[in-house]
Image 1 (cartoon, helix red, strand yellow):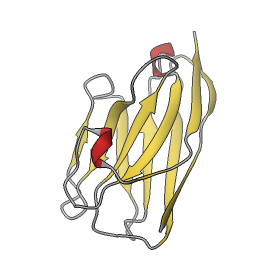
Image 2 (spheres, helix red, strand yellow):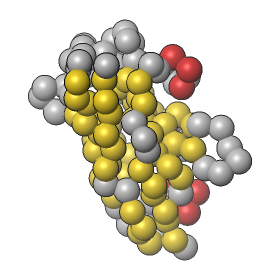
Image 3 (cartoon, helix red, strand yellow):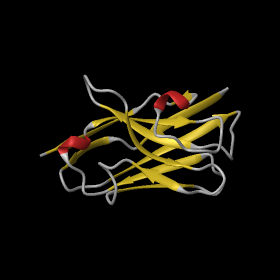
Image 4 (tube, one colour):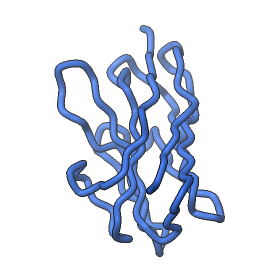
Length: 124
């Protein structure tokens, strides 16, 4: 089994920054895709960013391009999401997901393991 634990959420003013972390433990896979999604009340889970498990190539959702940056540590068991120029529309619970193949996807149904989520709130 794999456990994913997110941290780093909080309350920030518009224009501010936050850095989220997601650490994998248990039976970890260092060559699998990992991703960030977010979900607001009444909305479907939205793709934010993902990383290829082998090449380290990243993909981003249109709403966060140029503002958010996904990175991964050398062990490939921890991913980070640096969020800059935050806007109120970024308010959501942010979830980390792990896929059982190396290829990143924008579809949350393709990820097998999920963390418990971390709340991000951006005030105007």
